[in-house]
Structures are given as structure tokens and as C-alpha cells.
Length: 582
Figure (cartoon, helix red, strand yellow):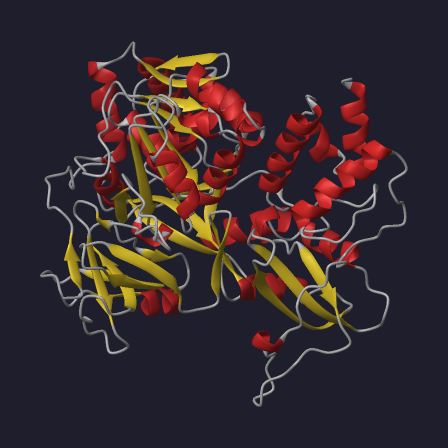
């Protein structure tokens, strides 16, 4: 009642990531470890390159528990860097080069990173130096990486994950079979914890990591081509990206053994659409993967082999091997099956805590009273679930101020804190809106003086927050409703008007522009659209842009490139690209 135990399987809990990688190098030196565009790197070559960089890191003082910032985009250089950091005895801190500089500095400071690795260091260090593995013994409880998530205090918080936790995720587990014949897609941004599953799931089992080009991920139709070209067998996608791909290119997953989706609730209709597809269009297995960063990527997984006609949600599944789940009430007592409660997760996948945040660590990482052992701990997820009669967990929602935007965790408080730094913001509230069918952030703002524009607020945030945390819509008001305690009453905020953020100074001038404007307006949930209006300022995002370009190409038999629209996200540019291709 209220307690679920995953299968107990033996895994190398006393080992480390470099140690298991070394075993693969010894047994499969000539096997391909990483495919990245024109680069195909064997296990022996990756071993030598990472060894050279590891020796360079050692000369910079990197050793046990030292944190190293890794400021690299996805690719073989990134894989080389994170492996080298671990071989040197340190822990990698992956930071996306696309993040605002201020956010990068905050992360490096909070992680207490002693060194930062960029492409320049990788190229310089891997061109010469010792090729043998540094004589460093890495303990299983040593820190492997620090990964940052959105923080409620207005500053991201770094989750500290040990080697043992990663090994529990990908060694002798039961939600997917890893092995030397697996070709795992590398799709996730390095700052997203699915990166852990992708990289180590491949490299610790002799498999091949296939780096999928960014334009293939975001361009309609290209993902399926990349999956086929790389002969990918296993791939993880966020639920949001899965939904977008299924909307226009449901055959993109043909040939996959395993398609894992997660990061947010899975679309019932799209999951049903896929599992009811004829073979070989659908993957052999569709898996719903759930797990906070604090419990090392996945904690609960469920095979989706059917979706009943009356289903209103897709269950998240059962605890994976060597993982325990507890559904508890406010007194931390197990609730009866079928009753809603908060989900707590235990086992060796639980992270060490938050870097430099002892109070927050104590609040979320608690002693595990249901497991023997003095150091047993459980993580308080903040997610409401219930244990259904079929033996699976069903996600019901959040108990706090956290939301998921395209798979990324977003604390609304962090967005509000950033927007509150705008000098012309007197009062504000950030909420989630789903009236258009797509989850988006909406900022309600009371300016200090009239005349503040949504474009100005969005531009202000671009240099402070990553793209997925920037509100899509801005509602400027004279005042905001308050509760009796003087706080903003978010439940009483006005609905988002149809013409929010629009500047429609330039109306469509041709029949083509009119048709395109109607398509874009419908997609954004707006009444109308000007030909020079910015798609993103009006609530668009990269996934909606992908769907838009696909729809336009299909409707006009065109070949508009997603990159061209992202560079100039207007109806005018769309019309020019469609006309150019005629």
C-alpha cells in the first residue's frame, strides 16, 4: 500500500564510469563509439583523445571532486570532454553555449568550477600529450556531474550526481536492453539529463552513440531521415517533440527498437496513434519514461503497448530496477492504492543533493524510513500520483510552482525574478496558459510608466534566461488582482486576449501573404496576424515553428527551410521563401 519496489538486480555499484568504459575499450577497441557527421570515432580513438585531455586537466589541478565546466555544443568533442573530466577524477558541469552569459556565470560560480573546457582546449589538448589513462582511482560514490535545473529562488540549482547513480540507471536494468549492437541517438542538450542516458547507455555497453544534427531534430521530415541514415535503434525524445513529430511525420520512428518519451505528460492521442500504426512504421517498443534530475534521469518507466479509447492519461509506469517509489500523505505515511499522494523516490539513483544549497537539500532529500541502511534517502518530487489497480503509477500534477515547458523544468519564481529586474516592472505574475493547445508561459505585467512594450520585455529576458523559460505572451495591465493577504491572485488573472503582443501595422498585401497569415494566426491562437509580426514574440517556439514550416510546405508544395524561418520569423519571409521555390 503506497510503496512500490522495482526489481532488484546486481549492478556494478562499486565501480565507476571510466572503469566500465575501459572494459569496452579493451574488448572492442576498433568498434565505433561515436558517429558525428563526418566523424566516426572508435573506442580506442576516443580513449586516447580523452586521455590526452584528462592529462591536461590534471595539470590544471583537476582531481577528486573538482568541478569542471564543459561549455560545448553536442558532438564528439563534448563526449571527449566529459569522459576526460571523469578520467581526471573530476565532475563535469555541462553548460549550453547558447545560455545567456549571466546564467553561465551563475552556474559556474554555484558549481565552484575550477576549470572551463571549450573547443579550444579540446583541440589543443587532444593534439599531443600522453595517450595512457591517468593513474587515477575514481570511487563509485565520487561526484560524476553537476546538472542545473530551474530554481524557485530566481537562480538555477545544481544537482550533484554520483557515479553509482548513473550505473544504476544503465547497468543491468529492466526498462531497456543495452548492448554492443545498440545505436543510441544523441538528441538531448547536454544540460538536459537525458544526455546521461544517451551517452553512458551507449559507451558503457560497447554500443554506438549517433549524434543527430540539430537541423534534423527541428526540421520537419529530417528526423526520420537521420534516424534511418544512422540506423538508430534506441532514442529518447521529450513528450513535446514527440507530439510535434507525430503531428506531421509519424513514420519518423520506423525501424527503432526503443522509443522513449518523457519529460512531461505524454499525449494520449499521439501515443495511441503510434501504437496502433502498422509495422514497420511504429517502433518495436514505446516507453514512457519519468524521473526528476535528482533521481538520475529515469525512476519510473512504462511500456505503452495499447491506449484504451476512454483513456484520459498515459500511466508513467512502475519503478525501474533498483528503484523504490512511495506514495505518501502530508505526514509521510503511505496512502491506500488508488488514493492521490505525493511521490517520493528512493534507491541508489537518488542524487547527493544541491551544490551549495544545504537548506534546499535538506528539504527535498530526506531519510528513507522504508529502506534499511543508515544512509538510505528518498527524494521528494513534488509530483502528485496515484497507484492504479493495474499496478502502475498515474501522474496527476504538481504540488508547487513548477511546470514543464517542452520537457524542461521551469520554476515560475525564477522567471518572475528575472522579469522583476526590468526597471519598468512594478508588479508581475507568470502563469501557464494552454488555451491554444500548446503549453506556454504568459507574463502579466504592470509597468512603472505606460508605454512598456512586450517586445522590450522579451528582449530584456533574452540575455538572462534560456529560450524555453522566456514567456511567449505578455499582458500589460494597469493592475493585477490581489488576494486578501496582498499576493497576486493568479486564479483571477484575466484571460489572454486574442491580440496580445501583436503589432499588425502591416496587413497582408497579396493573396499568398493572406493565406500564410491565416495559417500562422490559427496556430498561435490569434484573431489575425501582420506580415512583419515576430512569430516568437507572439507566442511561438521552436516546436511550433517546426509544425508551421511543415504545414506550409505541405499546403504550397514548397521546401521552406526551418533555419530560414528561424532567422526571420515573419509571414513576409515565409511568403518570400514559398514564392522563391515556385
